[in-house]
Image (cartoon, rainbow, N blue to C red; front, side, top):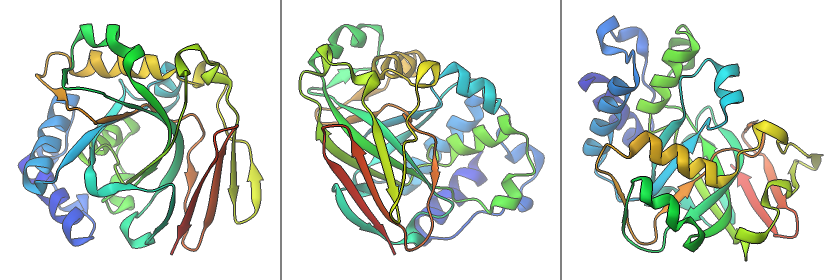
Length: 259
């Protein structure tokens, strides 16, 4: 997986794309372990400060629909976190989607293990936006089946792009956080794309899925790190010149201008 990790790191730094047509069969990840090997090399070569993790496709229903074998994780790079009123160059987020999420903020250094679930009520919870992206030439990625595309997505920084942290949900532990409505206004067109039912993942379940994925890999959260908990909405495809306003019910707006 050395070639994949190296080329993805170069693509991130140079704002280019990776054409998978130049890869042999044994250079494409065929399982999660191989995807993580490429991902770890990506982070090693990129050598950027990280401030947490994100995890997507947590819901079993979503995994079944997409043909995945589990969640899609990736680190959060410090330089990718933006304020809740921000401007983004489209060239920095190729093939991007916007997803409305929650994010835990971890209050102290903790190892990712089963015991972490007992500390969850001490964590702060925020509204958040995950703007996913891809550093692949899409036609070269789309020739693979959905499962291999998922492994390629994990290798590609968990489809990482930009992260926006919004307002804190006070007393979230006793609030009905799974029924908070979310409105998305894109270029003055309003939709209400929030998931309900089994597709709407409780952030506590996201933390459990994250612990299950990484508890045997000697990984820790640092004080102040975030865990982005997975989409509460259907992903929205972003276009150049979009004006986006995301409204969480009674929790204020996040405003994004794409140039």
